[in-house]
Amino acid sequence: MDFINKRIKKLKAYAVPQVSEGEIKLDAQENPYPLPQEIRGKFSKILSKVELNRYPDPSYKRLKKLIGQYCGLSGDNILIGNGSDELILMLYLAAGGPGKTVSCPEPAFSMYRILSKITGTYYTAVKLDKDFKLPAGKILAIKPDIIFITYPNNPTGNCFEKDKIEKIISRSSALIVIDEAYYEFSGQTMMDYIKKYDNLVILRTFSKAFSLAGLRAGYIAGNKEIIKELRKVQLPYNVSIVNQELLEAVIKDRKVLLKTVKKLNAARDKLFKNLKKIKGVKPYPSRANYILIKLENIERVANSLKKNNIKVRHFESADLKNYLRVTVGTDKENRNFLEALKRAV
Ligand code: PMP
Image (cartoon, rainbow, N blue to C red; front, side, top):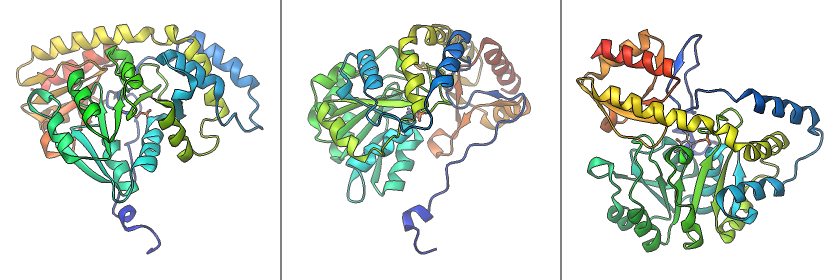
């Protein structure tokens, strides 16, 4: 099949193992709590009225305005996609591609690397410094065209120092992408810097704190000029009428939807404290809804978790061989995870 690009032939399609019955799913940083009944009722009413026979508003003006308000910006500062994954692809289409370089402090979210391969963008990983600190100087030295920084970082869970991030933004001519997928958990944001720097975009998602991973929705906030350019690589009608209508309700009712954030943050801190008490287990402090853990005996732990039907995230890279990342679940799920861990170490 010579018609397939060589760089695509080398890849493996993205795959996730199937969820089995009764499994405790702590691998994908999802919110363990389903949508509140009150929101489900609203969604049903909306869905009964949407005009599915018509194309949606391709510029989704009302929704952009609402998300803009949530970010303290205007609608012209916002671009919406089917999850932030689609938006990352759009960033690559607009600013990456053959002959371009992307740089990313690692360990990082795997999609930055995967989409660089798909789009033929040269990917340079820069190892985080000790204690997962941001190696700003090393990233700048590469002189990349795009820089991805996750804030708080996935999978390490920490927020890098703002002054180091600002150093990168102010000294680089690259497009700087600050991925704030876990913003509602951390309460930390670089959104204010958009008014100060025109090479910065913030990426966010509805998949985590908002309990809407199944909907597939995220957005980019940036200055109007960047958004105008990015819109050129957006497919027409990329935000379905269902997503547009439901997301409007989500933004209006965000206080109800985000009630679980406080509960999950408290559960995360409790889980962290309990993990610290276990010998051979080193949890890292996190500002997000997951915890990275270093283990002395990863194989025994992995077997015990598997036996107990508990799914966590393991890593292929040699640097993270002895680590796992656990998503904060319900209190019961967290207890089950702790028990299985204690039995194994
Ligand atoms: N960015 C980061 C840092 C993530 O961890 C994830 C998902 N795990 C995403 C983006 C993708 O989210 P979405 O569901 O919006 O595609």
